[in-house]
Image (tube, rainbow over all chains, first blue to last red; front, side):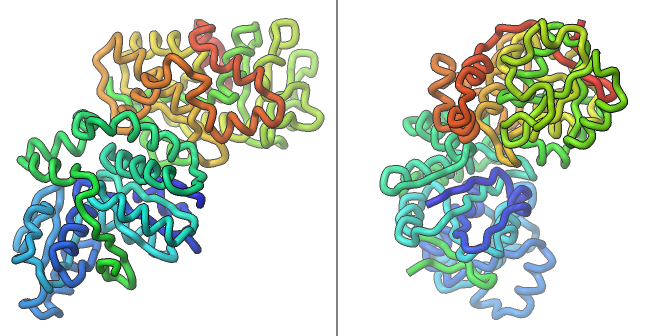
Length: 239
Length: 239
């Protein structure tokens, strides 16, 4: 299994995904939110790029079965039902609902891998479950770290490294120099995930904005067996 | 001092270098070759992108004062005087000569930073001398890892991390998440630089091609005080 790693959604534009499984990672917080929403019973998550798209899709949907979620600059969008905190996506809120989601980085990263044979969403919470799926599928993989505002984000790199580490334990994988770098970063950080991200730009910003509980939640590795997959514009839980 | 790190020459195309110092790194082997050629008395190195450019520039030069150097796919170009091994660039060969150089990654990385206020070339051999210059200049910096055939190369990342480590010891620097990652990679590798690159794609290829001595030479950190600077298409030693 060959595994290529891409450090931002922007860089994914140059990649040929044909026949590959794309794994999109946005630990803080889009892929953690989507995993949590589906785990807690949401029917589906529909990622869209703009606030306008979210609003017009909502206008055409049954409001009893639909929620609007997302953020701009880490803050909830005015008039939306939910922000981008996974802690908001509780069972009683999301059960049997379709969530229209727009975030600054994560939903755009999902758009950037549209030509892949399969699109899987990963975060630290579901990394072991995602690794199992990848081993079962046994196809070449491109891991896309979504990044933050066009730049590489250390939380995504940590998750990519963890995923590579899990895969290496159970399968014969061949990765590129970037994958080697991230797998080592994870290994050196495994005992103290939170400390390893203390200098991370996005972590510092979320702390200032009062989202420390979100960070703790998103760093709980292997706390979910839910694997979100995207197909024709809709993300559902893989059964 | 703000320091941004870019992981391939290709990614440098999206960067605004205005007012910044660009530091180009291609440890294996272009920037190691250029540092060594200038240290050993070459008058200048003229980086060009194509073999054709190198040949036509040579045809217009004094052949007694000019050498053609470079590689394609790590191997010397037919008809050229020198390949891309720093060990070939001995004092008796290069003294007072202008070297027209074309390599697959390094010379293209230099082209990609043309709009920078100043262009400095770094490798592991001259990293401490480069760090001193950057501290003296005290401008914002973009470090460009040249990469190998469009992909990030671990040797360049190690050198970028080392440079950041040296700067951090002596100045107040602010780097991005990618810089944080590479500085940690260097710190975890400092005691065993060669081991840290054992899985590196480019290292493995150079070994197969018989260039193990080149790798050893390029990994001799702080063995040179020579800092190459590019100005108007010509690289000379900073005095």
